[in-house]
Amino acid sequence: MLTCHGVFLATLSAEGRLLVNRWGKAIESTANDLLICPKPHIGPWHVDIVSREQHCCQDGRLCHIVGRADARKPIRPPHDIATSGL
Image 1 (tube, rainbow, N blue to C red):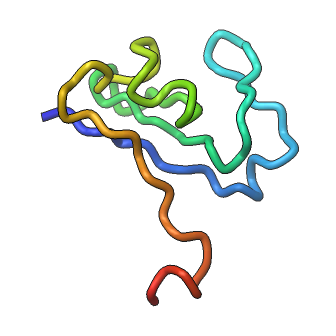
Image 2 (image 1 turned 180 degrees about the horizontal axis):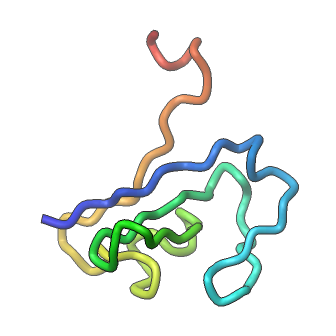
Image 3 (image 1 turned 30 degrees about the horizontal axis):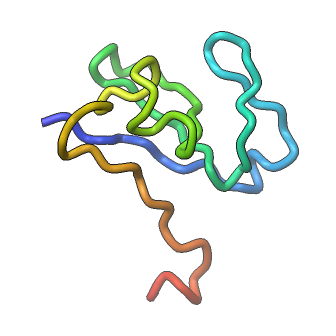
């Protein structure tokens, strides 16, 4: 079964930076929306920076689970210790 392996970027790491996709086009999303998305079907070395809103479960060039009936966009975990339950 193929599942999403996306990991959200730390917003402080991405905020205010120009990030581009593998084709050199700017990714126009908020830092809160960005993920590092491994591509295990290509190889362990291949990752993409993707927008949850623009790419996850929608863009077959960047999402390996697009079109699957059980495909779900990843959900960002809580941001701070107060809301994480720790």
